[in-house]
Length: 197
Image 1 (tube, rainbow, N blue to C red):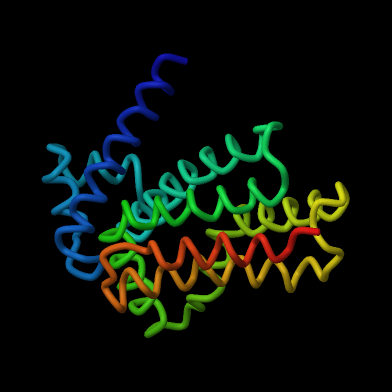
Image 2 (image 1 turned 180 degrees about the vertical axis):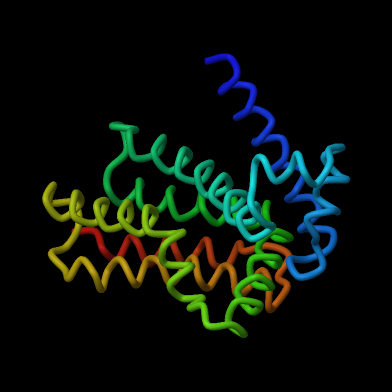
């Protein structure tokens, strides 16, 4: 049991240091050797934890998304908030995480462009990584409709509408290089309030 815990701890440290390499060098220029060097281990040892840099990158993103999910679930479980407030706070919390991880988002974009040149489908990759956030948003809309706090509406359309704010945030941060998303925060607050009864 202690061996498994040590393995998981080391794996987590590798992921943290690998993210630094990806942020410094970008996905294409990051190498397995650079990651091993940053971690102070040999490539052979690194292979005991991960089979390639794509797997390391994938686990790094998964770890970040897990942190986002934890914040979202804290908001969802707050019974003192109504559905409109929960949805608004969840979207704003995700945007805050996006702002704090701007450089990582840039690397994710670099990675998606890299895989779009191969036979892999970048849309499928994004969908698989964000499926839980999609489900959470949809379930919050359903809960709001059932509780009578939100207008009866097509859940998928409403979900896509809400998720488009997150996509807009990524575009504004990475492509337009906006320093902050205060205007988008105001738009989100207004838009979610329009869903209320």
